[in-house]
Amino acid sequence: MALFNSKMFKPKRKKIMKYVFTMFLILTLFFALNLLYKQISNISLYKLICVLKTIPLNRFIIALTLIIVYYIILGGYDIVAIKYITNHKVHIKNVTILLICFISNSIGNNLGYSMLFGGSLRYRLYSLYKMSVINITKVLLFTSISLWIGLITIGSIIFPFTSAYYKIDRLLQVIGIFFILIILIYCLFSILSVNKTIIIFNKTITIPNIKVISFQILFATLDWIISSLILYSLLYTANIKYLTFLKIFLISQFCSILSQVPGGIGIFETTIMLFLPKMKNNLEFIVGLINYRVLFYILPLIIGLMLLIVFETVNLIKNFNKTQIKKIHSK
Image (tube, rainbow, N blue to C red; front, top):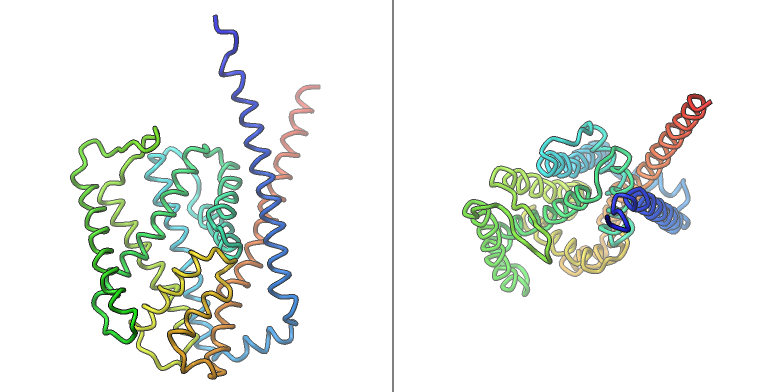
């Protein structure tokens, strides 16, 4: 007979993981509130309203609609991933998945290191619905890969085949061809692999079938296109062709992701200005960038924090009620 039974440690492990997720949640909430305070402390409510008033009503409606669609698509990553990874064994309503994704992405995108902070929120919120840590990790991996797949797919279309306007374009064309090869290898690997699994660091990873990969590429490509259209709709004074703008947008976002600066603030705007030097003194263009920062980052951050507080409050009430019921039955 074994001196120690591994089953004895499972409850303890679950408790430890619960405490870890709770601590991450508290830290994330602290960083998010601190960031929100820093972002809006120098902007009075009057100034914020004045900035938003500069957006023509039709552009404002277009931008808000695209932002909603953008977050629905991000939720689509998780819906596809959960159904595929758990083989439909985890039953979470699609609306709930969309809310969890919105909370984690709206906060994670603003904090930098979005995988760490946004990921910790997903761990916490999905665990409330009895989803295992392993499955949550697989979902996070799937969505992270999807993000890069989208960037690579768009880059493979835009970089090699758009006209050369900048010195860096020759390099981008080479990168674009490299991106095409990555996408082809990724798809062929799925089609030709026999057992659909590979082992990395003693971990078995299931390779998505071509149907799942098709959904992944579709969602990821739409994600990048729509996020670029949000900014494009607000920079209506720039008078720049969309495909050229999309190239600049992708490079700016790539620089933001690499920098891990919260929300890419400063890095994103500076990179765009480097490619559009004529716009440096264009007040309407600069206001458009500010409007984008407010609508795409600050507004979702505020809503995401409010929803997170609601989620946690509802969970506390449920746990309290369960505790009270157990006490009643134990008497």
